[in-house]
Length: 228
Length: 228
DNA sequence: TACGCGGTGGGACGTACGTCACACTGTTGG
DNA sequence: CCAACAGTGTGACGTACGTCCCACCGCGTA
Image (cartoon, rainbow over all chains, first blue to last red; front, side, top):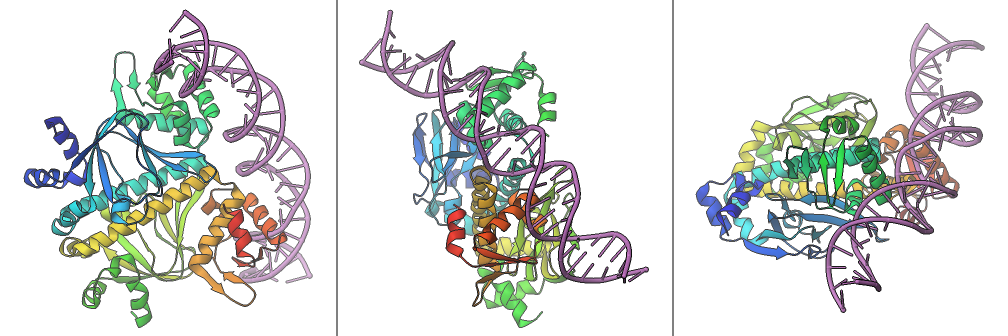
């Protein structure tokens, strides 16, 4: 594990509460996983008690409806954690994890983490905080599904992706989200066609430019307004 | 606090991990709150670091959109916990809590709970499990918003309410949910009118009987099928 | 008795968005 | 270098559900 990886890992909620020494000890239990784009880490319905932190790249969490339609819960990048639900609450996984880009992950099993939870209460407290934040965010997304139209949700999703993966440049805010429009549609709970039309509309208004698996945001303020 | 209250409280996730002695000690910090139907316990945007467990009655958690429309996150009954997000993650409340019936609550402040989190890791672990379960449930509801039509979501909501508040009788499963159709509509993310029509349709098919703030489920299997 | 008032029942109408269909473009690979 | 395919762009059409109406019913208050 490189210094850079150590740095990325230290920003994950799980490690934030630990001092240098504790972090080092916990890192000793970590195993690294690599996936190519499209490869799946685990599937809905499988049992599993490992959590993961993204070191490099992006991975998506998806759920499949009985009829086969898919729904994207989130796209995770460096320092973000997932898979912990099956660890805290021992039940089969309720989502599949599939690599969106080539990705490297740090994995940690239940047995490795358990002593830290019981022996270092500040770690548990930190995790409670992380879950509480997630619950809040999820509730926000739910409200959007009820109150906001598809273009509004697309705008919101782009702004969220921009915040997490955006790279400022002289022409605008470059958001290389690595998602197909199909995936973007699954993320906002709409059809691919409708999302495409919303994006085309935004582009026609000069708010953004569409690129392959990316957008360049040109007028972030207008986009913000449209998202409310 | 009556013996009955103690019993209700002991079923809450917060107390489940404690032995008799620990539970007794933690109960000493609890303060009781009473509300009449319609009274609000706290409002979205307020600061607050108390969590509550319902002792008797029902309370709803609602969010208000900027334009005033409301969205019902959940309806909570005896032994159920809420308000803990602001306790684990110190931020203003993101929902309001309003009594649906006359209700009695056990409240616990951050300062009272903190020593238990740090001193009794099994309590923290239990809470992590509770939050993980909630996150799973919330993800389910979100998927329903995307994939299931309004009648389906109404059926799902009724089945959920039946599971938590249903009383079997010789005619059918009596679900006294205490919600107006307006509130039921906010719970499933639809308009009051559409929910009314869905209920009327179910009643016409003989699956249930509509009563004031209640339904009697006559054919739970059909209802289950309709909810998928 | 009359009068609101909160809640329910239901019809008429418009529209946002899903589905279907097809054409176009860029990339992979044999 | 062309085939095959994944991804994108766009129009036509149907429909589920929101909005707007109003009628009705029971209940408490004057």
